[in-house]
Length: 101
Image 1 (tube, rainbow, N blue to C red):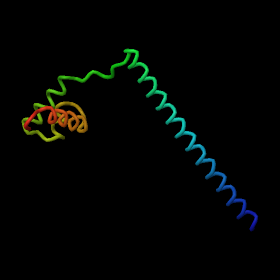
Image 2 (image 1 turned 45 degrees about the horizontal axis):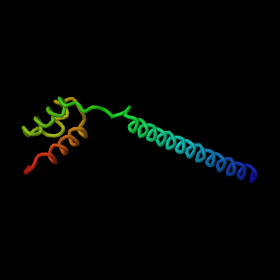
Image 3 (image 1 turned 120 degrees about the horizontal axis):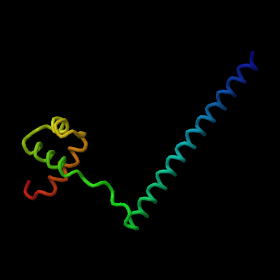
């Protein structure tokens, strides 16, 4: 009876250790891939082969117009067909560019 209790404790400990090891390996792999991607983008930018995504001027204008007309962030996102976080980001950029606002 005592033997099965010890075996269970050892088995659970080994399983927990293996799970932690697998999680750490997955995290290390993720961080390595992200770092290599960042390095690749940086090299491509230096070589002039990567400029990033071009902003959608039409969406930006719609967001600024809707927010300027008093629409809420949520309603602006619905009408412009984008996310609320994008509305917040574009509106903040617009507010910083407009003097005296």
